[in-house]
Length: 154
Image 1 (cartoon, helix red, strand yellow):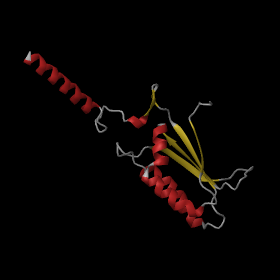
Image 2 (cartoon, rainbow, N blue to C red; image 1 turned 90 degrees about the vertical axis):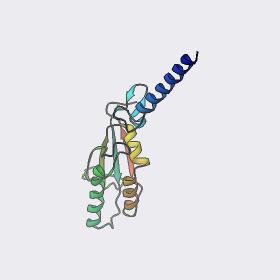
Image 3 (cartoon, one colour; image 1 turned 30 degrees about the horizontal axis):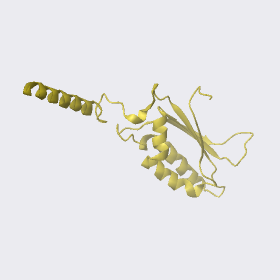
Image 4 (cartoon, rainbow, N blue to C red; image 1 turned 180 degrees about the horizontal axis):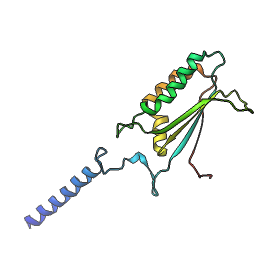
């Protein structure tokens, strides 16, 4: 009787140990919770478009500094678990549209491998939060953004 009870306790302890080992965020076989979207599995890539209305009084040197700061986020934004950059790509430049309206001066397209990476970027990432705070004085309005997932129309 004592042996059966000991085996049951050892079995439960082993299951707990395996569970803790496999669900440790630093374990190589673990998929962190924030790269999972729902029951369908991994979330799909997302594109974030950031639109700027830079004040007309802003000097060209400051505009270049702002643009370079935005482009540098690709290397400065570090994944909290993997400790590596997580932005897939950043592209951007000055507005050269023929039918321009609304005072839009610059736009940037930032691509992420998962919606959760975009969420971390916008809501938590210290590098982005610092950049956003630094550019406020140069903008006529807050950053305008739109996000989409390729091929999802509803």
